[in-house]
Length: 486
Ligand SMILES: Cc1cc2nc3c(=O)[nH]c(=O)nc-3n(C[C@H](O)[C@H](O)[C@H](O)COP(=O)(O)OP(=O)(O)OC[C@H]3O[C@@H](n4cnc5c(N)ncnc54)[C@H](O)[C@@H]3O)c2cc1C
Image: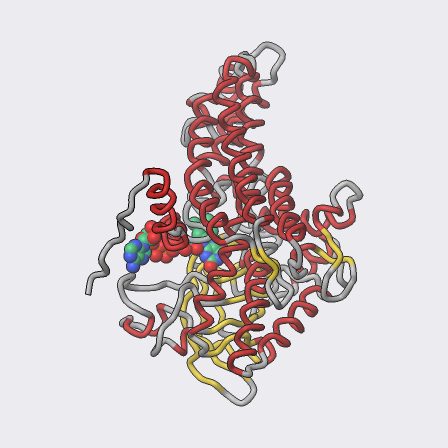
């Protein structure tokens, strides 16, 4: 198939075994349920973009593995341009739907990270994982799969290693190894876009040490596999997405908690099983790609915030110029993360396997900006837009349609002459959704905490080399080194 239309994608989602729950109830059809349909619609748009002459160059590419035209998220990122294509696609996707897209992001990134990791692992240990990853990537491309990616384990006591937790399930682990595959048990928490995925790609959340072997596991699992339960959690303002009229924003993510209860994975879909040395490696390659490309996500959402802020100012009767300084700062924030991502990508390196990995220190630096700058952008957006956009300050669609008081409510919403009060309210709802609601793309913790990124920057910085630059300029003979503590 290689390229799939949005309608084909939706039909396939309908056929999946129902295993997604919300509010304690099973969702029979994720394509129509109010809590999940907006997300499915968003993923559908990404598939349809392959057939739009204005978008196809962004959303498709030529597959390095097959030479065929394929959805970008089903391909190996083999060059810097491929990874930059990832970042540009994300920025465009946010323009269209306002929020992030798990099923066309994290699973793909994990497969790319595994591509180099398994290559090295096979060389050292004589394992056969790399061919399996290649085969699975070809399978994903041929079937135009939507794939979420699950790293984050429940983790329990953060000071303890997986093996020292009071409950094995706090980290996903191999409960049993059989001749034809493995049995998985445990929890993966806060995973984006599982509801809209056909496969979930799992990998370790952190480096592992001796004794942690059973937790060092990577694999591909159908989203509806027997034994896998998905608990959908998006809230609180996602209830908006379940509301009527202009209260429902036509976009958005899903976030899920995954409970693996004896899930069988056949050998051909197992990409790591016990190789602790490579758990940290795959995390590192994952972060290099993810923390570079996420600059496009927050820039894309920031672009929409600028548009919404200008729209609100004009609906309030004010010109863009009144807020020029603030708006320019918002644009600078966007371009900082976008440019930071591109810088990391183009300063990257080709791995001997053929995968392209962005520059580590630049990718992690970008992640820190991605964690903080969008908050500034959001606050400024609300500042420009007014109190109507702070959460809880817009009457609901139903109230405005009330035969008793609706007309007067709406009348009082009027701002600039010539602007329909309904349009002012719609724009305000969008600002609320983007800045304090579920439109937030998870830029602080998504892709890992800023502290872990800062740690990598700290470890990658050659402090003594920097001291030597200063010493040479200052003509200081003393090496000014710290004595290593015994
Ligand atoms: C919107 C969103 C989307 C996400 N999507 C995905 C996804 O698609 N796939 C996925 O796998 N994950 C996803 N995540 C999860 C995300 O990767 C994690 O939230 C993130 O890695 C942090 O883990 P945690 O939430 O368990 O934080 P915690 O581990 O609870 O950390 C909390 C804070 O404590 C610090 N900390 C933790 N342990 C220590 C320690 N031992 N010493 C010192 N400080 C410590 C951390 O740096 C952090 O600042 C998503 C998260 C969000 C918010």
